[in-house]
Image 1: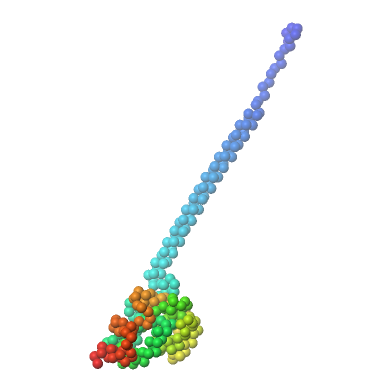
Image 2: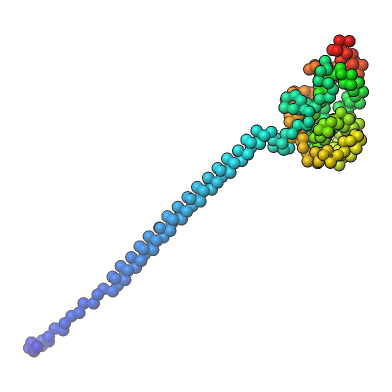
Amino acid sequence: MDLGPGRRSASPRFVLPDVSEKNRDGKRTARERLAAEREKQKTAERRRRVLIVGASVVGVLGLAAGIGALAANASKDGVDEASGPVVGPSGAQGKNGLVIPVGKDGAKATLTVWEDFRCPACKSFEDTYRSTIHRLTAAGKLKVEYRLATLIDGNMGGSGSKNAANAAACAQDAGKFPAYHDVLYKNQPPETEDAFAKDAKLVELAKKVDGLDTPAFRRCVEDGTHNGWAVKSNEAFQKGDFGGTPTVLLDGKNIYQDQSLTPAKLKQMVEAKNGG
């Protein structure tokens, strides 16, 4: 349309959409979705860790409970933690079966002898009093209660005291304790040599006792069947508050600490208890 000189008609105007604003909105929405997704992942990860830790705690507690139950059962069943089951030898007597008896139960005098097979003073006692003790037990006038300790193992190191005590208990199972007991002392190695720690040595000495070297005896020695028992016997000695080995009691009275004791005096004391 002609609007006159100097005037032109106005051209139609088109408004374009604000693309930059839409882009900003789209980017913001994407960031929000990404942040939300990350937060979901973090939450899931925290939940997973909680479950793992919880399961681990339950597992540890269950394991501890199991170990505790095993320990309790072991204690009930008579198991020494260091040396295995506490298996006493055949015919053992006294509290906890720690006494190996020799002689008649009806004897009127009882001699209690605490010994360690590695102990030189014990060997000296045995060498001096062995024949007298044998005669009195054979006559039915004396019962001897042998109780074994493992002091030298603790003082000098090694395991000969315990292993020899186990072997002596194995000999008791075979009904050969007195003879094997004497053989061990007659063949006692020097205190500083732990020869009795070797099973082969203990089995070799069994050959000196008629009928003792059998597969059952060897198995008992090599398996340490009575090791736990030997440990318990030594614990009983420690609790007794004795001065050392040998400790020799006649009807409960310590007689070996009396330096005037002789084989003749021991015989006299036992005879007196038998009324003659």
